[in-house]
Length: 58
Image 1 (tube, rainbow, N blue to C red):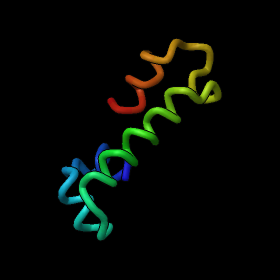
Image 2 (image 1 turned 180 degrees about the vertical axis):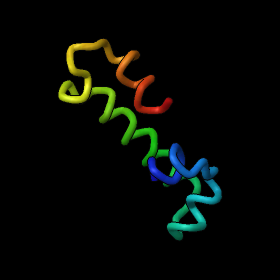
Image 3 (image 1 turned 120 degrees about the vertical axis):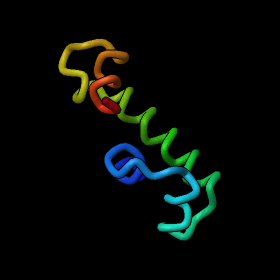
Image 4 (image 1 turned 90 degrees about the vertical axis):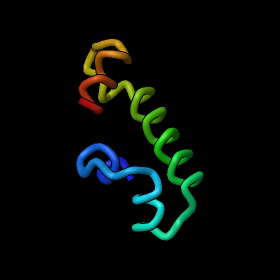
């Protein structure tokens, strides 16, 4: 879902249609995935969470 959203620029309804799931499931799954990435200290490489997250979604 993150690839569809941030690399392909798809909307929530488009992602839901592609994957055959509800829009609510797309939203909650993307939110949980981003939260996990923000909390993952391995990805932060010593930077704060906001700086690391900014690089992920830039």
